[in-house]
Image (cartoon, rainbow, N blue to C red; front, top):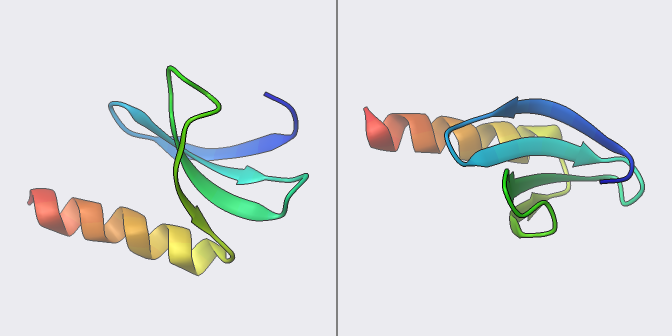
Length: 57
């Protein structure tokens, strides 16, 4: 893992800013290189996280 800023995590996912690529990512906590989703903005990442919360409620 190089230059990442971690915003949070869930059971299996980690929510990060990839500083080198200036992209917000949802990745697997176990397999760091496995990126599930990628966003250009923090709002996109936050919207994705909120959708997951609403879906599971």
